[in-house]
Amino acid sequence: MNLSRSQTDLCFRARLKTHSERGRGRMGSSAVRGDLFAFAGLWERWKDPSGQWIKSCSILTTTPNAVTSAVHDRMPVILDKNNYDLWLNPGMTTVEAVSEMLRPYNARVMRCYPVSSRINHAANDDPECAKPVELEVPPQGQLFA
Image (tube, rainbow, N blue to C red):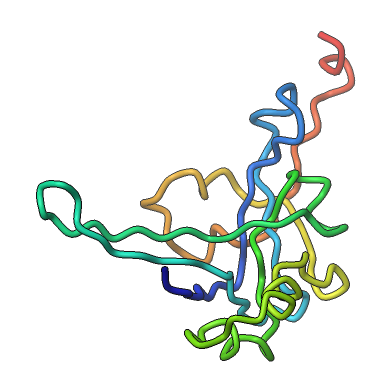
């Protein structure tokens, strides 16, 4: 198993805290200053029984911080910049050091805001997807309809 990191400037999550909230919008989480951040990941390649190479990867998750807990019950492990090299070091075997890196990211340097449903379509791969949007509030007469 190999360690990897993936950099991004925004993490999208469907707002799905409960089944009844499905479809109520997408939320974006980002660093307050718009800096890039890196997810902790694992990757592996192996041969299946027919001899074909399989490449697989995953992004590790952890419990949510105060920013993301309103949106979902977990969040990606976001690595502190000071830990990038340590995470990628194949010789690093200290369980305590790894455990420290798998904690929720500092909520004080993150923000969460609604984003357009344009993010639901892979063809929409542009900065417009990351722009904050106003949540639609149903007219008063439709609240309990």
